[in-house]
Length: 90
Length: 168
Image (cartoon, rainbow over all chains, first blue to last red; front, side):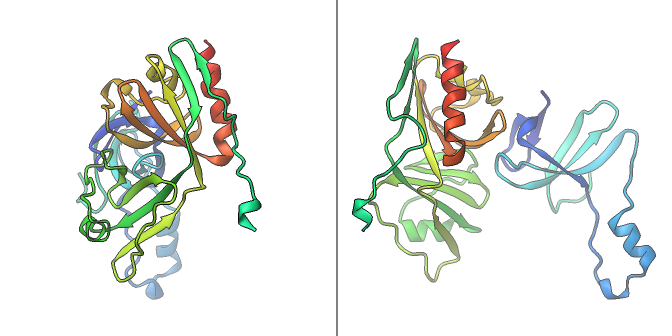
């Protein structure tokens, strides 16, 4: 089982306590009224699918309950780092 | 009317005793979910220091998350209202029951379903975690004594899972 470091608990915790929550750093539209259909499409549906380093949101759902960001390698499944939500992209 | 009602428990009130292990139902207690962005607001309200490190437990208050605490108290204790303070206090006494897992084999039996590294889970710590697929709050009260807080509806399954592991 993979151990994931929760930046809030500051501890390595078993993988099954966590839930994946999609790509990280997707900003909500500041002014949604002015968004075109193409911009909505990009915001809602278009996601990166890299081979290698991927920024992801995770939630420590069976622990402290917090969302945080992680950098995971999609090839090796290794977590490079995790950091609190709101912190700049690493 | 209420005094004519009798309390029913989801698991047997007779403890399970095996080699190096006993599993029993804890006495009913009051449980409160305390939420606050600033722990100072809770300290003002309760008049005690609340732990701020996630996973720590002090005087029956366990820090489960950065803004979440679980307070367990004996039945009959009254908690002051949080009116006027930026806190949320919810009585969740009947949401969960508590199983006491005791004996030298207790860590081994909990590890049958809980992947947490209990060698590094010191006495006095408390955390929300998972047992197989069931969410629990695990509290370590002594080297050989754990409390497992589990939701009532999951309790019969939890009891079967723990006693089955204890039989092996």
